[in-house]
Image (cartoon, rainbow, N blue to C red):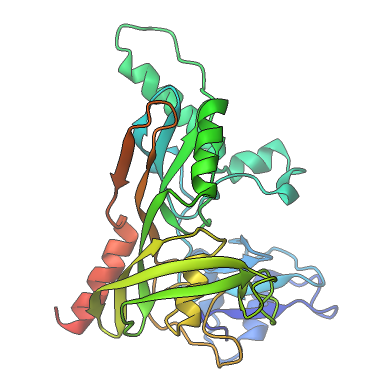
Length: 330
């Protein structure tokens, strides 16, 4: 069992050709015969990272089947994307969890059908804006053409929260430069394991810290300088609601810094504790990665006006926090 409570099974040559349902029953002999089917109905089974609900799906050698401790939420749609601000130069939106920001290079060969089935925020946002602009022009019967959006930063698939997209090349250049200079004001809300003290975490982050995962290394020549300011907000039933304010913005920075400090983000399947130590098992029951981009501030690319946006925890994390409080007797 992994640190997130999931079980992972590798399909061998002898298991190839069997149905997923039969293999689940074989891999989990201690479970009731009906539990395997229930796992599929509950959206708790993935094959090579993709949700699978088909009990008769035939397995292939080398495939990786993961049984999750909790159900995967239904994929987000256009209706889950909230626009906070838009003008002719940029748009600020709230990204739902479960949606990637943009296409990765390895997805370039995907068919149009698969792209529609697994759309990115970059794919859906133009349509969201077009509908919003059309509805705002009450006297117009013509539909607004889908506007162009240009991503200038990313959030992880399972992270929710505020993002800014450029709508012009001039705005793109200015926003990219602000991110490069670390002048963008960004704060995240996270729910972590254990009781964490207020602190500033500073390290050099590299692609491989020594075990194949991103993480901190001692040699500054091998990593990028990263600084995260951590402030506890509330202690709840062996977990802490924290604010993480970024001074730099490296890939997975908050997740890595909190994990290496011994307080992984609840629901994190990748970063489960410091290098060389036993993984910290997540027993929180988090519905997904408990990380939310709650604040975003920057200078408008054209007017130079300071813009600042804030958003509360989304419903799934609010319910999760409420459940922890209830268990704690609050």
